[in-house]
Length: 287
Image (cartoon, rainbow, N blue to C red):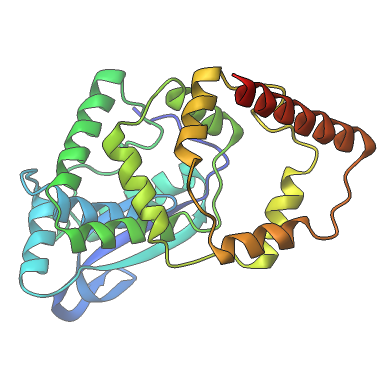
């Protein structure tokens, strides 16, 4: 049974070659310099998934994965080539079936391929249920925990590179937002984030800051019109009491305020606040 698939995707058919076995391999009109051992179809980065799976899931056993692991152990990497690209899903299935038939499968004694079927039974479009998703998530988290510091850095860098220039859809962003709502970070996580922010080696260039500022124009801040409770205000006040500003901090405040013009209403509010503070000070002295 052929799985449902996204019609907008562009598919391709790919071949895995064994770099250890170099010769002239001829299958009717097809000619290869290395022995082919797997044929598949997919889109995006599907062609690399078997190589990643062989490295990551060491307990998973299959002829294809064992062959890839053996190639890696001997200090090689499997050669992955796109046989035919820019295909529809139906066209890719047709090409895969034809290619497997021409080269032949090892399990039925017709050729060197480790494919267990004649093709066309891919997992594209298949959706896991919630139970399976949670199992996959747990096994992935376990895999990340067992990595060394260097391996983790390499893994996250590869993930960042894969997402360069790509954006989540509005639907995905809303789902991500809903999943994070109501979640509170632990004290340990907050402290770690603070330390990481302090140690950051880069600052945003002015051009980026301007773009960020423009993108926020006209958007009301989340705390607009909201007032902090008295307990919170007292805590903030106590934390800042007796804390002197550095010369650099003072200069930054001065720069930020130079050339800034307050509205008449703002000036009135400032005057009222100052007057209120003075009256409070006088009352305290009397008491």
